[in-house]
Image 1 (cartoon, one colour):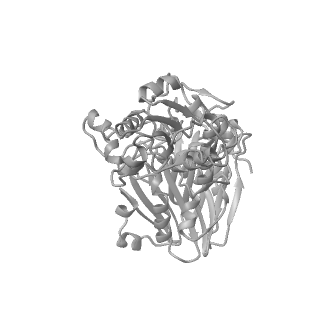
Image 2 (cartoon, one colour):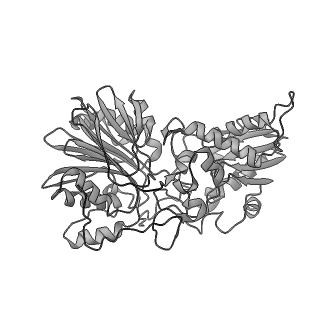
Image 3 (cartoon, helix red, strand yellow):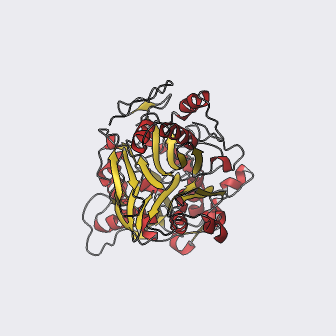
Length: 503
């Protein structure tokens, strides 16, 4: 997996994947609905934003670096004609941080115009790129999205749309949710294990495909359902409906559990589960497994809020020992003890390590009256490198907390993600090779506990084998060189040959 970030400032935590969207409307220009949908997906990527539309005669494209509001002006939207189009917001996990890897990726060829937006990460992109380059394909970026686009374009020269997509799915290996424009036809594709989310929505005058249902809500649409793993969805050109083709079926899925823990918006529904309710339920499980009686429980804003609310609710019902609360015992008080400075972005530059370690004071300000002289439980979604957690514990103690207990609404991250999350290496992950007690000592907390993987599977109503747990187990649902797998899986042997598509 390539990583061309070069001198980009180091992030101290995980960063989002990408967001994709596609719409097909009945006569109305798609640019503004796509623009609004990208705003709803902005949390999934802040490096670049783009829209590709087609007016039935030609393709129009506008792709720029930066946030959605910076990438598009009024004049830009006015030039994006056509009732069909796709959009993308990107955070790079494979490929460089520059305009060459910004999406949607566009290509024109003998069979028409192609646009492609990709959320996820291929693990065999280099193999396919080498094969296509040897066959004369010229690449303009080091990203895996262009690999998919070139492979699909080659197949479309000889086959109809459905067979061409199936051929490409038979060759690429990894996680992907795609929105694709082939002239004025919009497609959605989800990888056979459903690692990345993708859903279908109905609008007043058409249909939409999007990474999250929050984008559908923004357009006053109705969620129809999730795109199934291995399914191709083709939106009808008149906005009247969609056609479905189940191209690949596998026994097990590999849904990314971190969508529910961190990445997705709380108001999104992913794989039939409202993310906010899932996080509250994970918080309740956290109390059941490792609750500690303290004066207050507070979230790390904003990611820990739903977990802390669920934790406090469970604590109001039972003691940490699992006994029912007495009528006059309210349990652990939920309190907002940390205020977030929302104007310090993820890419805030700290030129020295000392300043980076002090950055938490810029991002979070404690409410002294909530903390001073009290025992505190602080809840977050994850600990990655441990820098922020260490500084946060110290901040609370400096503010007068008598005890600081840390609870995490997910299992410990012990391995990198190859599926589209920009996560630290094993050498940088504080939980890799360390026990929970060693991590507790490193961050100077009075106690530390993580949620179990079984609790995650229980809350999401999934068998463990149907979740991607690679970052917390070190065993992956894809064939990744040098890594263990949790199932019988192997990457396609591209070998210069093309796989036949069934009728």
